[in-house]
Amino acid sequence: MNTAAVVIVVLLLIGFLSILRKPLKLAFKLLFNTIGGFIALIFINFFGAIFGISLGVNWVNALVVGVFGLPGVALLLILQWLLNV
Image 1 (cartoon, helix red, strand yellow):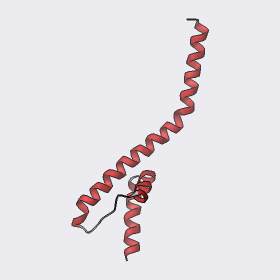
Image 2 (cartoon, one colour; image 1 turned 90 degrees about the vertical axis):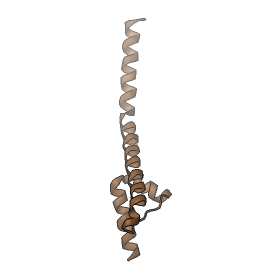
Image 3 (tube, rainbow, N blue to C red; image 1 turned 120 degrees about the vertical axis):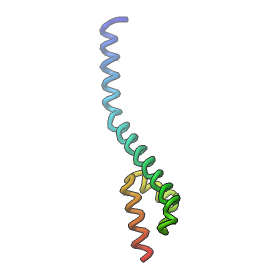
Image 4 (cartoon, rainbow, N blue to C red; image 1 turned 60 degrees about the horizontal axis):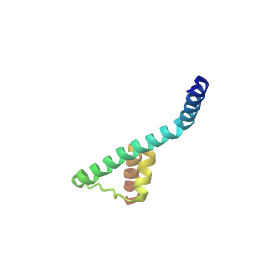
């Protein structure tokens, strides 16, 4: 293979990966927030009966938890407490 072609392919690959770096970073951050929030929701629903706390696993809660992660769970708990008082 021609060395110029190899250099061009490597440069194109580096350019392609640098373009996708930010969207991939955002996707992984969203994935980790979602996993952490889902674990927190399951934990709250499993052990929350002791303290009288319950959060449903629905699309709205999943969206809030997916975007904000564990602080989203705290936000949902605070909103539930404020709206029930």
